[in-house]
Length: 188
Image 1: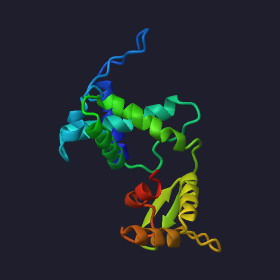
Image 2 (image 1 turned 90 degrees about the vertical axis):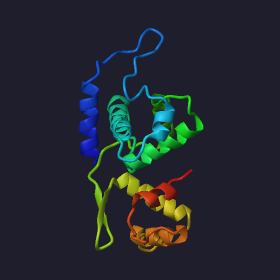
Image 3 (image 1 turned 180 degrees about the horizontal axis):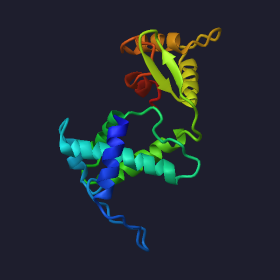
């Protein structure tokens, strides 16, 4: 999905001329960055507008990682669906803002937890399914599970800890670091 959206973001970016900021730091924000927040909140599932928002967001975060020293990945576990949900929440609260305002706020929110270095992903498997996770994200999962009292200090098995945590919050007990689990586990 990320590859499709990233390709779409590149294609969308090529369709619009690039412009640098002017002397006051202003720049021309093309479609979809210039969309008003109400377009984000009213875009229906599967709509072209929602696809454009998702693709632009993927490109935004990839560009941010590329252009920000010390940032490898700004969204190491967050899916595009998570990002769009966060944008919708922001835009619901601030309907007069633009998508680009929401993206700037989300970037600032995500920045402290950005990955600083790349690494080979680690396979986390429950015997039936496998999810690849950056080692730093897996370390954060273990730390957060321990903070919440769901860690086995003897084996430090993230599957067992995740299953117990998932059971406590009422989501499917897969033992995998899936989106619903991580959203709750990493919630402020």
